[in-house]
Image: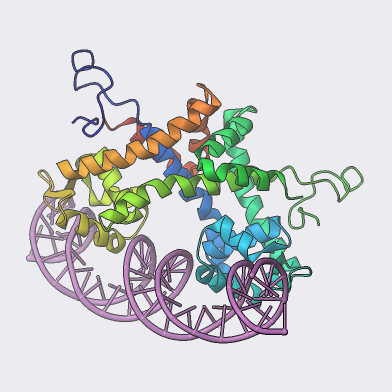
Length: 173
Length: 173
DNA sequence: TTTTTTATGTCAGCCTTGTTGACATATCTC
DNA sequence: GAGATATGTCAACAAGGCTGACATAAAAAA
């Protein structure tokens, strides 16, 4: 079965007969990414279930903990979901005492979000869980892997978003 | 704020005062993984919407196309969802002519799944889209990155699953 | 100062994709 | 023939996306 059905043939058929596999599509990396991400988010899921929270709560709690004082608009920009979707989970995090929402000081229309002590503890616990998995994988590959993987993952991000994300990563703390 | 609240302190407090940031949790990699995966699956999402399909359809179509003759049980094992969830999307893929389900030859209880011509074309188109993003990222990092990233991602997978996944990755085609 | 824009909140309803539990059928194995 | 296995299906529910509409307070602009 040809894998090049709908793309220009780079080499003439005479040079590369149909039995040559398509090496231009990195199937191994595509599938590894799927499996790795599935297990990466699986760790926190089990703990979050104890609190009646899901992945959406985790994402909110994580970014609020990492970027104290974050506004709603900034959080929406990070998560790329609608304010209605965000509000559903954020409201629960505030009501259960994991996140605090304070009216902005300069601009009183804004809300500045902060993790409470309980929120910080949960966020850190989840981050440590994911961190252990990441550090374990890095240890298997070698000390140079962290830097390479970070640059690779940054390269996967949409170019239009990349700058913003990297500035934010460098920023907090 | 201490980040070591719920874990054993590796260094005595006298050696590492509270203002030292916790380098043991790789926050940069945690967040990059989130952003990278979001954009990685975003590409196919837009195309799938034209067909009335979602991510679940993509996953099924992808693995069926890559592993012709796959059985329902094997697919369930890969996706780790319930047969009811699988059946919902698989049925749609069969009814719309992207996947073919044939009764097994040795064991007639089984179904062997195959992508149709249309299914192959769509699957390949989506894989090429994701492949372009991956290859672009690899090009930015360097030629040695592919191997390192593959080993890193494999290291993120649950140890209990890793062997099975890697055998299956090496296998098809 | 009035008007408009901005930041946030909220209601209502819909979709996809996961879940559990129950049950049916065909086929294989013992 | 009896039980185990592979699959299919019905019904109900939950999480977490979405759209559209509308409300309020505060800032910014006219």
